Length: 377
Image 1 (cartoon, rainbow, N blue to C red):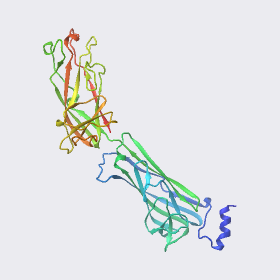
Image 2 (cartoon, one colour; image 1 turned 45 degrees about the vertical axis):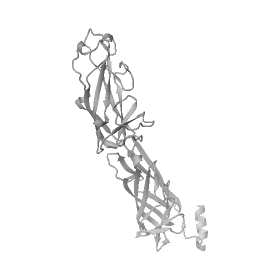
Image 3 (cartoon, one colour; image 1 turned 90 degrees about the vertical axis):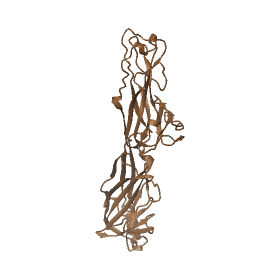
């Protein structure tokens, strides 16, 4: 025989407790949907001025049915974030509201309780279900027993703005357990939200092709490096939302630059594998614009992990490893601003090695190539 039943049979006539405890076999606790999915979030949805963003609301129905009148107290076990919200992953919270409570076919009020059998701290037709609390159906302020209890739940989730600034796609999940203590039943609920990183697309005018035309030996020096007249391209970066990003460039002719450093890229080699020269891509912040900023200043950092340089108006070349970004605050070392649409002129400077170091028996093609990469910060 179940021990709880024996105790109830003994104590009930003496009226020592107003609560009936049922066997788990006699009760069923159900949720209309155990997984609440808030969908895919991306930063194309512009944030407002608030420090957090509402992810949305999700609703579910809860029901508890027992074969005999039972204490219908329900508790929700989940990690607390604040007095009125639960923890949702690293930078999120959620709140749960309960309403439309019905006991044995009759609408009832709800009481917020800190423990089974305790007096309600708050009563209403609709309540915020606070962490470390339960709810119980009431009539005239008195907890009720019953056979069937149902209610509607609304769960609202938020994420702070930094939580949206992801560099890789990720999924948040949080779980909580609805616990019908007297009925001996529990059900787990899962909240889920997926986050996509910002997407930025770089584009260069003329398809990124720089043509220096036909050069003759009369245009070049036999014993000195020759700097060619600069060429210009327009670089545009469009993002789906304001984003902190940086620029780097990969040398597609790595090892062929005659002056090989972080800012110089190879022009390929001649038929005898002699290095032809090098080129660089230079940006003058005075030619750059973004969104509604009055003007931009450049700032850079080693790999984005170190300190950012003091923002200045001095021109700078796009590097292979040093991150180049922009801000609207002169002298700031706080790093890049959040930018959605960026435009600038890129000046391409090419230098040809001395002719006496090259095989001039055949025509030489300048064969420099590089790939600009967007780094999300």
